[in-house]
Length: 99
Image 1 (cartoon, one colour):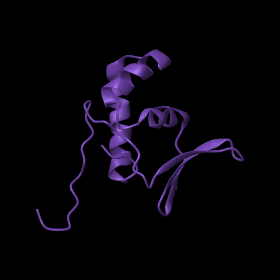
Image 2 (image 1 turned 135 degrees about the vertical axis):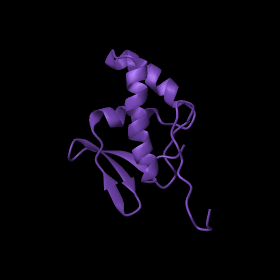
Image 3 (image 1 turned 120 degrees about the horizontal axis):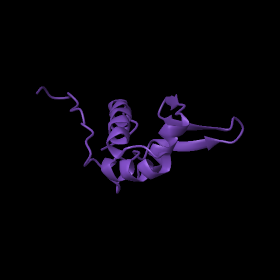
């Protein structure tokens, strides 16, 4: 591996995702929507992404989050785990979530 090359973090069921200090999840009362504020970038997550991100506290695992959301959305945990793993991987690749 060459110097300066960034290693891709891989999200798994055992990962403990959290938002880096420079990334904020904020509710925009004027627009009635949530935003993810990152340096020089703004993301507008959908309602399910917000539910996942609110649980990303760097202490819960992806598996813990899937189990919790399984009850909330009355869906199988393995299906939720697959969906949130893909979403968190995409956000990790953008530097919005750390694992």
